[in-house]
Image 1 (cartoon, rainbow, N blue to C red):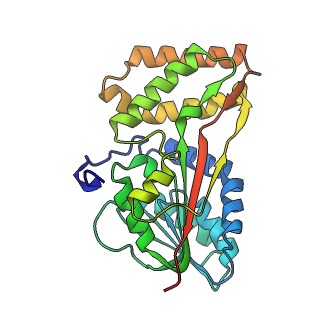
Image 2: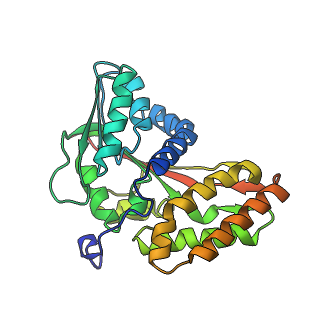
Image 3: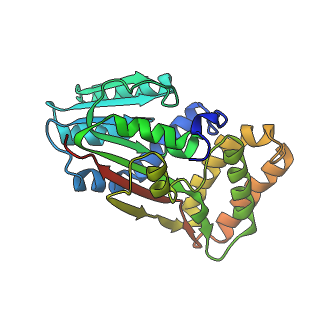
Length: 280
């Protein structure tokens, strides 16, 4: 790297910490459960394994891990949001997953990750938000046990679109992309994963995976609107939009979702990459 990741500005989480955002995260996690579960199985996650979910959010992937590792396994979730992590752990414990624990931890901080090493270190939609992507990825790789795997899934938002294109959706995307950019996020982080693996000293991924979702705009607009509401405070603060313009954008998207409910809407692409660490 020509400059170190730690020299870059610190990220501000663009999506907020409201109850509405927490529910949006749960909905998003459930939407991507199948492709994540497929990769967990492909990498052979099984009884007795130890797992780290880095940036665990609402804990939905922790649950999928716990179902595979069983009572003899170990699942640790870490997240900078202690409140959301506590809710996730309560949900997991209530459903009988006593092998799950949670630690509030800032992955951009220096020092080892608690509980390492792990048979599987996993992160979904984490690097997207962090200017220090390569540093954090190197820290995750250091937490992988010999013979274990690092698995990362992240977004490329550039795929969000309707067919045919709609000006209302394009304007919504402009505001969302601008808010993420102002917070230090990278809307194409998923496509950059092989490059990030190299920058982190991990090497070429053993494999990559691309998953997409298409649904009618009439239902898919809910996804767009929820993200827009979550990033709106930051977009207003950075002058990317105004109260009046944002209200007009949402109204236009709503009208178009009613008029063109059957238009296909493409979600962000969820891109995965993984690497197995050599046995020592």
